[in-house]
Amino acid sequence: MKLDKKHVTAAVFLVVASGCGYWFWQKLHATKAEVVLEKPADHKVSDTIHFAADAPQLEFVRTKQVAAFPEPLIDGLNARITYDDNYTARVFSPIAGRVTKITVEAGQNVKAGDPLLWIDSPDFASGASDSLKADADLLRKKVAYERAKGLFDVKGLALKDLESAEADWHQAEAEAQRAKARMRNLSSNEVASADGKYILKAPIEGVISERQVNIGSEVQPGAANSLFVITNPKHLWVLVDLPEQYIEKVKIGQPISVEVDAYPSEIFLAKVSVISETLDPALRRFQVRCDVYDSEHQLRPEMFARIRPIVNDKIKVPRVPNTALFTQGLYSFLFVEQSPGVFQRRRVTLGLQDADFSYIKEGLSTGERIVTSGAILLNSELSGTE
Image 1 (cartoon, rainbow, N blue to C red):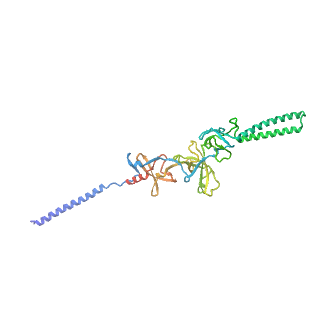
Image 2 (cartoon, helix red, strand yellow):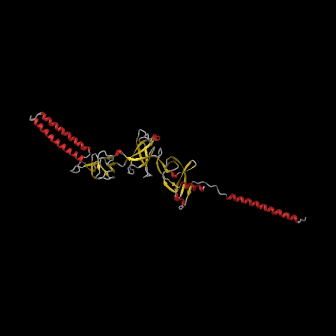
Image 3 (cartoon, rainbow, N blue to C red):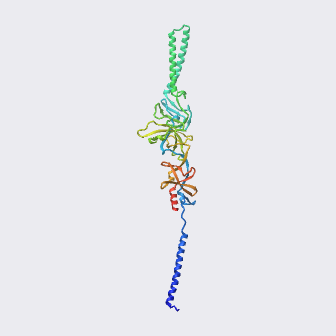
């Protein structure tokens, strides 16, 4: 059968169309397969971020080793360090006069009885003279009584004359005792020179912490300011005004942690020794006194301090600055340095938080290094890689 040209053309067109359709179908499925194969795997979230040694971000990161401190019961309270009056003497002059010589300086160690200064005092000279005259008068009248008693024994003197001599002797004895007591009250049994200068002596052993007198100064009893303050610098008091809502948390003998700005990484342990019985009506505070023994002589009177009552000074927990913490949702986090340039984000459970520090109950160990500055930057970098 002979096909005309029209039918041949149609048949060729159908064959070409079928081939093109089949080719297109194959290409479409191949493309889909390539798309499926090129789809990346699901990203696994990590809490660790790595930086090269020369990464610019590291310039904004500061780290510090975690130290352990006793966990306090309440927030830090402002306090003041003062002398322990049980180990302190404020030295005043018991007589009026003019200072002629000073032998000690502030910061010098002295022993009880060491001379501090010399005072040219007419009162002391008069007292010393009266004591010498009283002793001489006592000796004279004692001799007169013994002579009178000898005469009376041989019936050479009347009884009334003997009684008069005995009365004079006892009167002179009383005057001598009065003069000696006066000299003892002046706390000096020495005369530095023939003109009778008074020597003011140290009443206790300790360190001269204050000196408020100069050569030529006029001194007198009852002055407002002491001439010297002598103290044992290792024994101090810490005074704090305790808000009334905390009175149940503070007891006599309770351990107290003491911190000062001069030593921000150290704590000093004290114990509550006195709690006032009455509440200050103006401040609404109880005055609390704590005893602290500073064996290294680091604390000084009139330093400002912060105190925190603690339950047990033997149990310690990690403490971190608040700048190291950041929050995500309901939880607190910080970064722990695993190695140089490697930081791990870690969730922690907080205990007490105050204005500067937080105490960690769970999630951190003493001795680990944490990021104290730059934690927000690291968290931002870590979030960008997730």
